[in-house]
Length: 277
Image 1 (cartoon, rainbow, N blue to C red):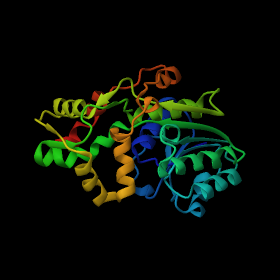
Image 2 (spheres, helix red, strand yellow):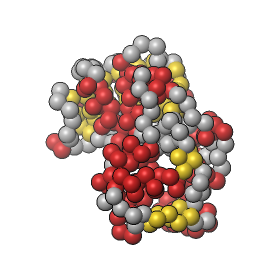
Image 3 (tube, helix red, strand yellow):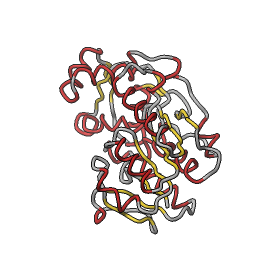
């Protein structure tokens, strides 16, 4: 039994499809509302909340493999419950910032979860993806309502990754030998700048979208009102204010582990064009 947590999210939902197409069985998806879950045929929907490890007893019963996203709940308690339930292998989605920006609070939190897993006694595989292509959904309201994106660092390109590629690697790690005790850095196939992302979204959505580069200070004011000063500063560092070679480097991990090339940003934009119309 494979238990996929975050089963309705960008990665979890794609992973359920990957496992279904691969014929992996049985598979169980964790959701807070099983009645509303729309999972592939044969995938069992089970209710639970990662913030409450005591709610996971039914979900973990009989599970031998677990897919888990760092930062989604009470990881120490969840991992302890998984070990007690007999889970043998955990695939954890962490972040590339653990190695590129270890000084950031979120990176420290992800590293702490990685260490908890490695000390748990269960087998482990750690995935460290770079910036998600889906982060550009932040722009969707402004694109729909105003036809404009205002953002800093217009021409700094990061190798953003399609969440479905994270799912594809997770499927390989969960179902194929050779991945236990391994840490994988995941990126898209090429760097893509904010300006190029906006152009791709405009092309696939069939609308005119302009890009206006703003200063870090203006961007910080906007973000800080939503997430606080410290988090806003960290986000802006990762967008381009404090980039380094580790963050900018393209890795071939997706193609090596799945046999398929990593999806370019334009494909993610095409897959999600409706969100910008």
